[in-house]
Image 1 (cartoon, helix red, strand yellow):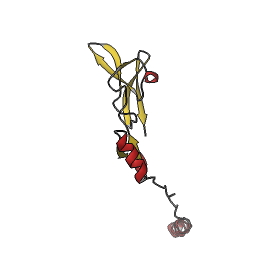
Image 2 (tube, rainbow, N blue to C red; image 1 turned 120 degrees about the vertical axis):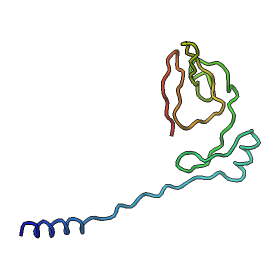
Image 3 (cartoon, rainbow, N blue to C red; image 1 turned 180 degrees about the vertical axis):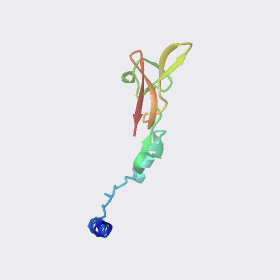
Image 4 (tube, rainbow, N blue to C red; image 1 turned 135 degrees about the vertical axis):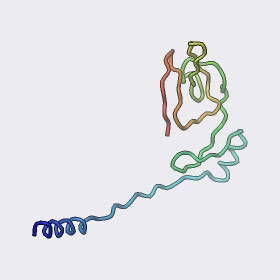
Length: 113
């Protein structure tokens, strides 16, 4: 009898569950004019996380030595050679993913979605 009551109770609980609607995220795409401007500025149109299109331009100071991301158009990426830590500016102005960055003598991991 107890199993029968539990079975009816579980059926009632499951029957009352409502499906959850997943919110729709609107993707943004660049216009033809924005794409042309991107390419004219030596950029490339790429798909960013979550499907949005962006223009990734080469950083003016890409490859330069840096001490923090404040001194770069992009990020100050960390490098360690022979136990010495230093940094160099990223080649692109926009970065996605996880990176080791050099900030005022310290190395930290930075993740950008």
